[in-house]
Image (cartoon, rainbow, N blue to C red; front, side, top):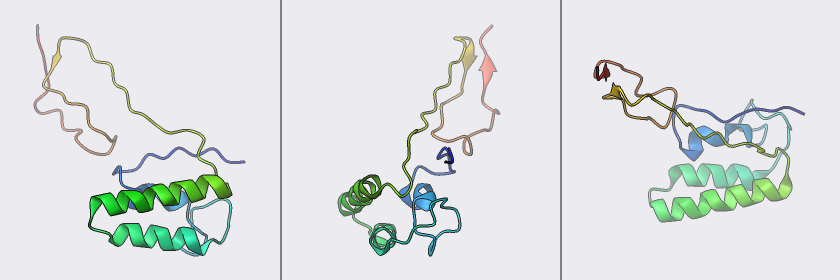
Length: 109
């Protein structure tokens, strides 16, 4: 068993699902499974430009992942940051990897 959180530079399926793919497409998955349906759905969703159609493909991918359970994502990370009321000019970003400039942050004394 391996516990691995999903925390990448972008909240996008093409960046997030690399641990759920077949060993053929990704060197990261622990299960070492082979599932062409997952691979094909992953490739197709990455090429789809219509957001509604892409979301449908992503949902189908997720359903298949959870049904087959080669690798089962138990935890989903949600970023919560508490700041003191005197901290001004800082906006919460959806990732640890973006928006970390503190140039506009100041303390209201």
